Image (cartoon, rainbow, N blue to C red; front, side, top):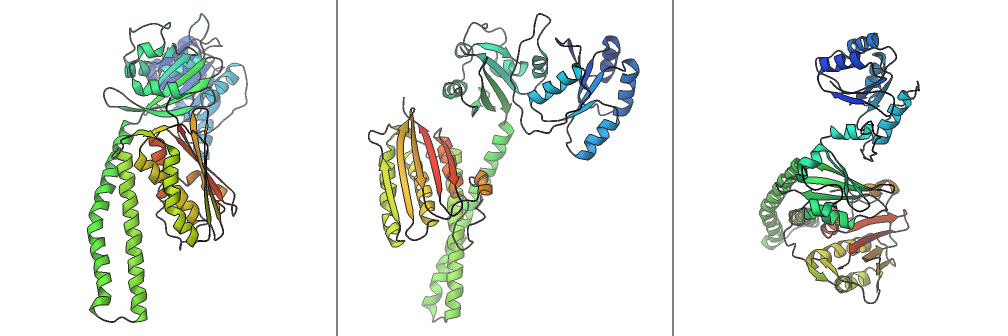
Amino acid sequence: MQAILAEKLPAQLFIERDLQSFVTRFAQFQPDLALITAQHPECNLQNLIQRLRSKQPESSIILCLEKSDKESITESFRTGVNDVLCTPCTNNELYATVQRWLNGSDKPITQITPTLSVPIKRGNNNGYHLYETILTGLNDGVLVLDHNHRIIFANPKAHELFSLDGQGNNTQPIEELIDNNDLLVLLARSNTDKPLLGEIVLGDKRVMQAQVTPLSELGMVITMQDITHLKELDRIKNEFVSTVSHDLRSPLTAILGYVELIARVGPTNARQNEFISRVQLSVNNITALIDDLLDLGRIEAGFDAQKGRVAIEEILGLVVDSYQGRVQDNNQTLTLQVDRNLPLITGSMIHLRQMFSNLIGNAIKYSPPKGQIKVLAWAEREQVFVQISDTGCGIPTADLPYIFDKFYRASNISVDIPGTGLGLTIVKTIVENHNGRIWAESKLDQGAAFTVVFPTIS
């Protein structure tokens, strides 16, 4: 049993992990509120609530429930708790629920949410506020900085991740206390407008997913979750896909070769020629899929990732020129408009050319005859923007959140139009490897526009 007992705010707080200690502490202090955050495996919840009620009938009891289905919530209320919170829940929901019951409310508010964000406050002279007590027990690292990047709060997990114990004081900025380039780069990229997500590699090779969230009245909060096991699973998956894809190329090449030799052995009729064409088309489609899988695996693994100073207008010019013949055959128009003196970016010429080629190629493929494809590039706020727009079939609104997922194709795309469902996944992976962002806007039957943003060389 893990529970928090609180008196009227400003709260006096206790955290108990042992069931008997919890009951003893409850009887001793008779708190106004008990927040039960994890049920003991040997505990009968209904009997526990009855025992607590017998010792302090006026206490409010809130249960944090892992299951969010209606039956589990209803059954929990039957045990006699005052309110139920389904985890994971936001700090605002948790704090609002606790406040309501400490202030004498008798109206439950049960909510289900997918995320956890962590703003924080300091308490008064009686100790830290409820937020800090809860954050202390988290297995995720939490750092709170003021506007001068000085550490206001660090929970035990953050101390362990960055070996902060006994180092410095709150008059030193974090740059002087923590020697981690990934974290410092993430902080340098953060702004006051919206949260920023990134990865931090620690000295022991653990990988943390970090989110920097601005707090207008305080500074910023950094939350860090260990995703080392997920990265390892992803690496194993990528190696498996690359190995299987590579091993498939040889038999497919052999199949294609023998199919092409059939006509040389002897005459074939129209029906046989149709079958041969279908085999060739299928083999070519599978080969294209394997090529995309291998490309994606190499990009995700960081191969061929040598980067230098790159001029976006040069890459766009090469890609646009390479597609002019295809555009003329389709009776389409492809135009390029680039601002003068466009700043340089840091990137891989090969990967960036592949990324823009995929985007422009998609615009051409999904645009009808006499369709227009426009490529615009401009600089703004130390960033380079590139937008590729078309007048094609567009993307349904319901499909927009998923178009960068692997093997996903929009619901309005005909099965007769070739594609592997990996092109946009490769595009997004390349963009993210260049510290960039990409998003799509579209109206059905009115075309689509993909916008890519890269930071310039400072």
